[in-house]
Image (cartoon, rainbow, N blue to C red):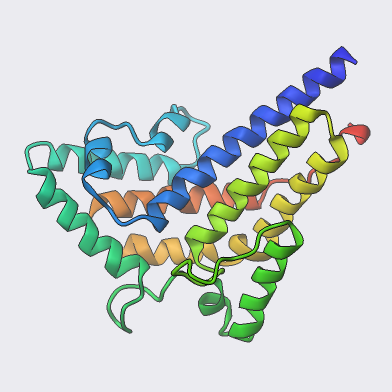
Length: 236
């Protein structure tokens, strides 16, 4: 029993770490830059800064991203916060809101990036069905389509939080179901297009913050999407 509880704690910790990563990335996509973000950037207190201590094993894109963001912090040290906030807001809007063709990359919706080979509406419908299957109903007034990159990252965060809760209750079957859902959503949805979008952002970003953030997001998505299929604890 002690060994099983140890496994539960180990898996819960891993799921919690994944959830924090997905959640911190989602917030950058979902929330307009404001004064609080600028303060956190200047002090290097954004949550994802502390999740990647560095070293040779660090994903090359994550390493490049952290380097770009560090360079940005140096650039803005003496700039007024309002100036930095405005610069980030212009870049965030251009990169993530898809205001008009030719103004930034194509908007970050799964249907837009997979719609060249698949019907846009069917892709959107598939994402919404996956949410509903796992207990999430996209709000009609969310201000974004369900296949927006920030909402897909939020959904992955939710799946990880459900894993943590299940592991802490000792419910192995439920925990494994959510673990498998995380893997499948990365494989079938975000992992198929998220990194492609991030490459576009690295090419078109006008601030090193969002250029670095895109590198980080690309590295994280690719690493997690390429992880092996989870195996039930009963088969370990």
